[in-house]
Image (cartoon, rainbow, N blue to C red; front, side, top):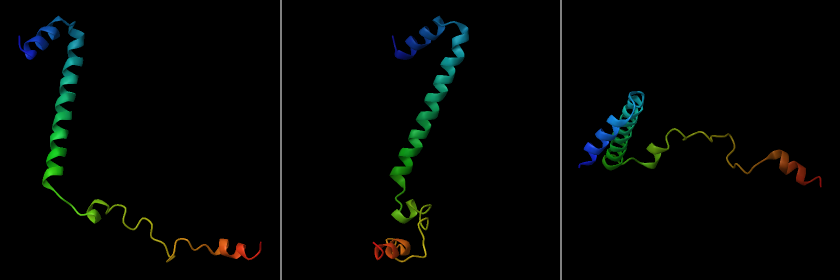
Amino acid sequence: MLPLEIAIQKIQQLPPEQWQKVLEFIEFLEYQSMHQQKATKTLETSEISFAEAAKEFIGCLDSDLEDLSYNPKYLEGLGQE
């Protein structure tokens, strides 16, 4: 007996109120399969640069300070100890 035939037989043995859950699970599997295929195709077909991949983060650390280790309050406190 084929797996599909076994599955149909088992579904038929379930109470009718369980059939909707079976259908929802099948639809979930279809959705998951579709998204996995799209993700695989996207990874295989398109190569992008690091800058393109990180474009949403570029500039998020912009500062007026040239050296981020520069902290005038800290430097002023060093001479007073």
